Length: 390
Image (cartoon, rainbow, N blue to C red; front, side):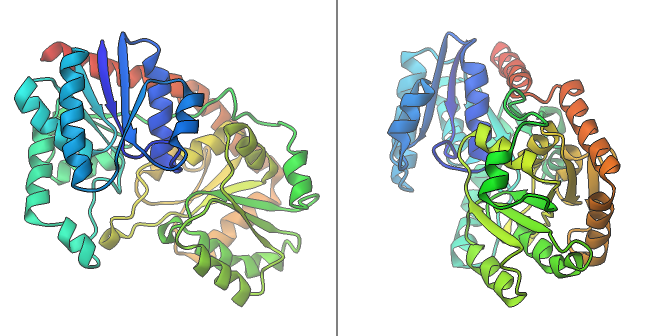
């Protein structure tokens, strides 16, 4: 099968969608006669592409220009390599362009939907311009003509159906984890020593620092927890637009000795050490629909489970698919400080219970086949089915 794979959120960009794009590409490409990736030319792409060894074509990422370049590049590749199916990792711009390519060539296409890429906020002049009748019209045409729509969670499937998408076209395929690298009980002394975590209770969040991710709520509950656990430390791995606000919040609550901003941790092996260094993985994502902010799934929850860690998560978006409540972790109201304080206290006070949740997480990764190789196989099956129907 000859596949054209297009993602405008692809490494060396960071974040969940970029990670998913690369992992899926890596796990599908080896089995195909032709597998060509088209991605934006962003800073550092040459070094990344050289290491990845995947056939990757980079194009300019300037709006309006990129759409035209993408159209002609895709048309050329479809004819030159006799492409059987186009797999779009975001609906815009690639799936929208695929719609027009399909009209001309009848090559079918598949769209992968996460959450924020599909919903469109209406706050601010720029977003209002984006959410105009033309864009909405193009989106409807694009999704109506798609061979299949893949999404991460049942939450997103329900939202797509409510928005008018064809339920029969939607396939729920959860993301995965590189289970050979994210493993429990590995020696995390390097991380523990670096951040002076010996004999301390450690909370960890790994995510982009955005306002809906819930770092602020964890910080606000820390003063209550310090009275019970004076040695508690909150590790924040990631960077993003909300970092300045979070640092000011830490200063205002006099928590500088209890909150550590790590920045991005590059590489799965090193990141797995951070998971193994913590006592609890916590991410209290909440929904902010006015800004199109919602968690479609949360790959980091799978990474934490694979490392055998108890999880505390906000009950919102697609997180209920990622964290099995009272089995692999505890789901909470992401804005209820009293409830959050209570569940953190429960897990930090009961090591056996924390180990039970973490062990259940490890078992679930294996039993539910949540490795990236399994995810790749499921997606490939969808692409084969779409290609065979053309």
